Figure (cartoon, rainbow, N blue to C red):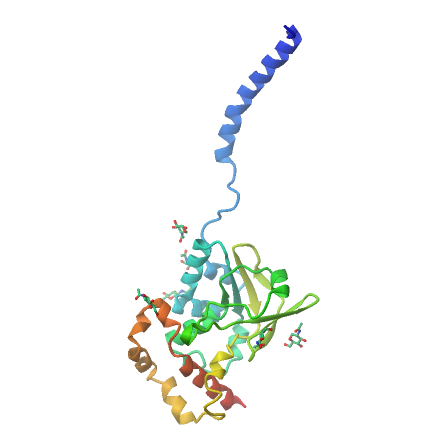
Length: 249
Ligand SMILES: *[C@@H]1O[C@H](CO)[C@@H](O)[C@H](O)[C@H]1NC(C)=O
Ligand SMILES: *[C@@H]1O[C@H](CO)[C@@H](O)[C@H](O)[C@H]1NC(C)=O
Ligand SMILES: *[C@@H]1O[C@H](CO)[C@@H](O)[C@H](O)[C@H]1NC(C)=O
Ligand SMILES: *[C@@H]1O[C@H](CO)[C@@H](O)[C@H](O)[C@H]1NC(C)=O
Ligand SMILES: *[C@@H]1O[C@H](CO)[C@@H](O)[C@H](O)[C@H]1NC(C)=O
Ligand SMILES: *[C@@H]1O[C@H](CO)[C@@H](O)[C@H](O)[C@H]1NC(C)=O
């Protein structure tokens, strides 16, 4: 009884307006651009864009670690963080270092550059050390990375190598990619040999780096298994790297 002709008119026009609007909004939503799912992550494409990461891209490709990163980013909610050494970083390694590594050893080295979680630069400034990487040595021991910050300066340290992180190739969830100017060589490569000898005799290490790389692979049939791969040959890598560094100094 309180309805006056005016309020009825208002109600009517309101419902007409709603009726008119609703199909329009329904028609708009499908054509509106989707918020974010801009296709699957492709670490190779991300690193190709700025340039200067050819060696790391090659390593990601030959070890299949690139595919693993793409898949894991897609299939986990934690995201990932990748430290991408520049071509200069690889150039500064002792000559032939990479070529002397077996596939399993290269996988381990690449995995050490990957964290199974997204970290912003700010996160890394305050993260608690050591931070787990994707690299697991024998006995499941994780090869951790340490981060130290001072003001805006952020360093990553392996115990063998320390370098500053100042450039984000990509900083959006779910994948962060940071440039590093040194290849991150894990301390564990050195620790596993440290107690046995200080100057590793070249004759023992040299054959391992040559054609017998295949011999090492053959001796470990489990290396066809992806999770087993990463646990193979750490001592050999340690020997090689120690040898290389001894050779340099
Ligand atoms: C990722 O990008 C690279 C280079 O752009 C391309 O060669 C490769 O096919 C891409 N991988 C996938 C799975 O789309
Ligand atoms: C990756 O390796 C394959 C051969 O294994 C090669 O055909 C391809 O060009 C490589 N891609 C990149 C981006 O290096
Ligand atoms: C991403 O993961 C979903 C399941 O989580 C799967 O259906 C889809 O095929 C995956 N896409 C790629 C490119 O791996
Ligand atoms: C980072 O490392 C450099 C050497 O590479 C060193 O001079 C600097 O003090 C370090 N900074 C921090 C915050 O640890
Ligand atoms: C990394 O940090 C942890 C915790 O502070 C420390 O115990 C460890 O010695 C550090 N490792 C290296 C290689 O600096
Ligand atoms: C791969 O190896 C791990 C142990 O290294 C084992 O637990 C797992 O079952 C193996 N997977 C396959 C498919 O052989």
